[in-house]
Amino acid sequence: MRYIVSSSLLYSRLQNIERVILPKNSIQILSCFLFDIKDGEMTVTATDQDTTISTTLELTEANGDCKFALEAKQLMNILKEIPEQPLTLDINSSSLQIEMSYQNGHFTFQGESALDYPLPRAAEGEGWFIALESATALSKGLTNAIIATADDQSRKVMNGIFIDITSEDLSIVASDGHKLVCHRILCDTNGTTASFVLPQKPANILKSILDKEKAGVKISTFEGQKAVIESSTYTLACRLIEEKYPNYKVVIPKQNTNVATIDRASFISAMRRVLVVADKTTALIKFQFQNNMVTLKSENINYALSAEEQLVCQYDGMPVLIGFKGTDLIELIGNLQSSEVIIKLGDAGRAGLILPSEQQENTDLLMLLMPLLIN
Image 1 (cartoon, rainbow, N blue to C red):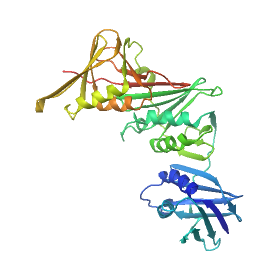
Image 2: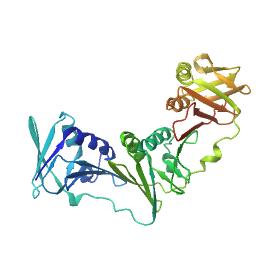
Image 3: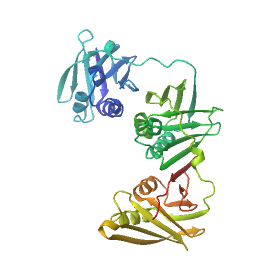
Image 4: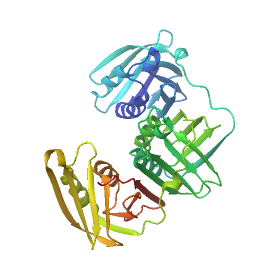
């Protein structure tokens, strides 16, 4: 059987789905891609048994149907060195010997039986689905939220991303207990009200592959145990975290009436400078907001180091002195796209709210950072 496919198209698709494969597998077949060629299309699948992702691409030429598995790392190392050109795959369906030919040479592989590939069971039970018009919107939400996820094996639910769906919007939420990101997508959910916790690994894969998708995306879950996310090019299915996510809405302060608007790039640069001498353990920066000015201070008492810098800003409110972990604040503000950042404060013991000065279309992005104690 003979098949012809674009080398660059095949490599780019495999590069995206390869990320689900574990570096070391106790089951050798899980280090392979599963190829299923049918009706002139090639569907390639990769899995770690918790997360499975597949992609389908058109073949330039196809002669019959075929199904086999092929070691992923070896194939990727070869494809990345082949420039864009047609690749010809000649497959012996009985022995599964595969010859891949290109302009200047060829490789010979030994395929594995597709029957040995452990595909997960199809989704069962009651479920629901919603369709978003833009896959990119979901990608941006995951990108914003994932920086606030925890790394806590004792509370795995905090390591994931909470998807909260109401009749008016879809909220993508993550928190490690110190910082929180809530990215709302205003959309028609067809009256659906549901929620689930997406593990961090599939979320990381999704934010990369969906960013390049031009069409919409369909999100489905089944009995709160499994989610399936489908775009025009990829289908990802994963096991969900089945713990209850904390009520994130109760920690968002409603009365932060002291509001500062600051040039985002200048603010980040100033924080990076004063962080040079800050205590490495706490990364504490003190912020004094008053009279359309913010003063940044840091110190390291053990080494007799200190730094201070002032920035002009628009400020409406009472004078506030508050401390934040500088590295966290830089990470949150650095993820915004607007030229200015809005910081809403209450007092020194209340969480600060961070917002872009301009929200993107059909989006409401809010970030929260807990303050540090100032001695």
